[in-house]
Image (cartoon, rainbow, N blue to C red):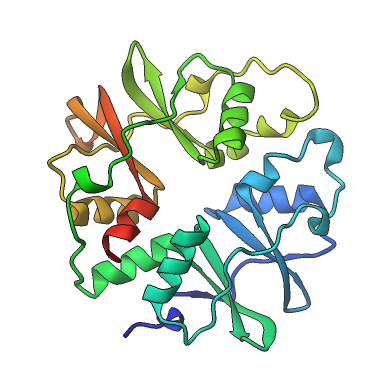
Length: 268
């Protein structure tokens, strides 16, 4: 039985409860973080996600972390079984959990993500159940290459998706994520009422990593772990990049598989 302490990141990057939004924003830009714990001393106070940061406009850069953070949906302890934690994360529709010293203590000792759990299941040699067809989401929220960034982050805010396939002439040509928008610096105008003309094609990642219905779930899990990505578009008729056979210049989009879908395949 694997426990949280076997997979968690100890001494995670944190922000003080009175840190300004500019400080928090710089942390997200500098690291591959999907969420950051907010602490007072070493006492866990809350969590700030990329989505939380997308709601902070340029006029509110002096707001403190305590005004941005939310209550963690799931909290783990080092001795918790990773299968139990995996089920809790899926049930709560969240991607990470802060790890506290014990149930009676809020002293932060680590953080664990869905990616960490998938990696551990792979390392343990556990076999996922089913096929891509069993976990694929066929109704996919997408955006167009010439959409504005403001429209896309509104889509993300409304749908809860942290990444969207980018389409051009009914073909997928890229992926845009919350991290891409945060890194670009354009998200901070989202709530300021200013019209931004920055187009998705200037910010998106292209060519995207893709899979097909014939791809095995274990292979898809390995792709997610290797590239640290949150989702894989499932395609037909891909035009692959010669030197990077997992990336397609364009393809017909038939669905998408997320980290959570992959994790579920290890739990069923």
